[in-house]
Image (cartoon, rainbow, N blue to C red; front, side, top):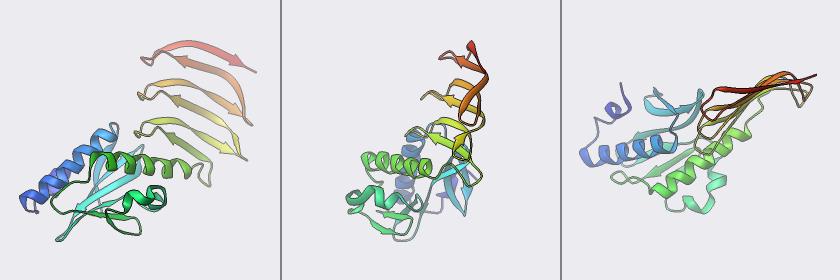
Length: 185
């Protein structure tokens, strides 16, 4: 089932509002993947859930998860909220300016969740494109790391040992082609 098909059970005006939000999210997260999770269209970046969306009999809801409400503050005054959920008008999508702030806030929450307990690290640009990926050990960069441009194209890759660059590091062109290799000892 596609995201659009998940909304076929709703009246036309509500379905149009939900599909408008789908289009806004796709535009704000150009590299996201979509799936149906918990019966709702859901959007992920690098496997990390960013937001879900669903309609209900009296309203529609966005599910950005915990932490976003504190970042948005007064922006949420126009909406009814519950923990991790934002309700909006059944027949009208939220303004694009609000959606942009919501997605940016969610990305900030995701970025703040790294590194994980196991040291895995990812950082994303505000539009959901991966910025960096690697691992921390004892609060120091360790092992292979990759850094990306805002376009999603790899910029640099190499390894760290206790926070220091080691071995061969490759710098890539804006098109993702290897440009030069620098060796660290």
